[in-house]
Each structure stands twice: as C-alpha cells, then as structure tokens.
Image 1 (cartoon, rainbow, N blue to C red):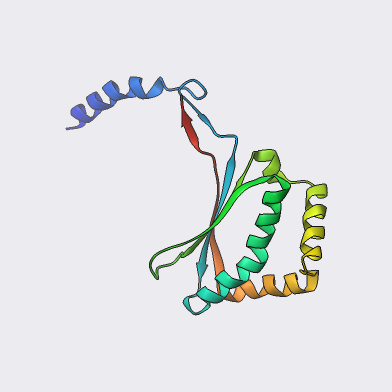
Image 2 (cartoon, rainbow, N blue to C red):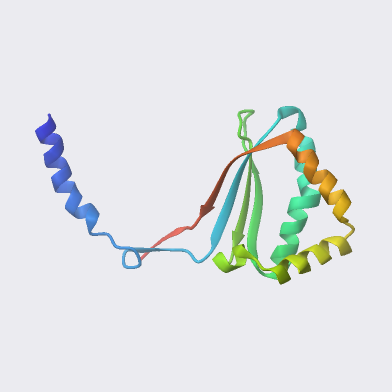
Length: 145
C-alpha cells in the first residue's frame, strides 16, 4: 500500500511543481477584507440596523472617495454562529493601507453628515455587548492566464 502511495505521489508531483505564479496565474490588484462576526441572537436585528448607520455609511463615503471598490454585509441563512460577514474590496493594497489625509477627509464627511465623535464612540462601544469578531482575512482573487 505504501509503495502504491509513493508511486502515485511521484507521478503527480512533477506535474504539480511546474505551475508558476505570474505565468500560470496571478493575484488581483484588488484586495478584499473579510471580517467574520458572531452576533448574539437577541441582538441580531439591532446590530444590522446600527452598522447601517456607522460602518455601512463610512464604507459608502470611502467608496465615493475612490479607494473602496465595493463593500457588503452578508448574513448566514441559519442560526449558527458565526452569522455576519463583512467585506470591503479596495482597489489595491495602498488604498487599503489608507493615509492620514484620507482618514481626515472621511472623518470630516462623517461629521458633516451628523455623526459626531461622541455618538460614534458610544455606538461602537455598544457593539461589544452584541457581537464577537471571530476571524479576519485579507483576500486576493486568483486570476488564471
């Protein structure tokens, strides 16, 4: 049995080792952040409504500013946890990194839209009672040649 397994690996290995990045595939310039959240069931609806006024509003402004390509709030179709998935797609790694100027511009737009720092801080601190962040990933899409 071991001889058969080794023979199969020897046959398959050369074919697998010939693939090369940038020749056979590349990774997208766009970068997607994935945040996996476990929201307590009795806070689920409240959480979704609150992130519309905070997180989603900030994402929409960043999209207008040109660094965020897309964002999304995804929910699982069952009661299991984790149950909320937040995605932000940036045009590239530099856009994801941000800058002081972009941060200042975003904060000015949020305040101009009626979100003062105290209200934002109070809402953000309330999230800790509602949910737990369970995973975070930075994703790049594979593009085959």
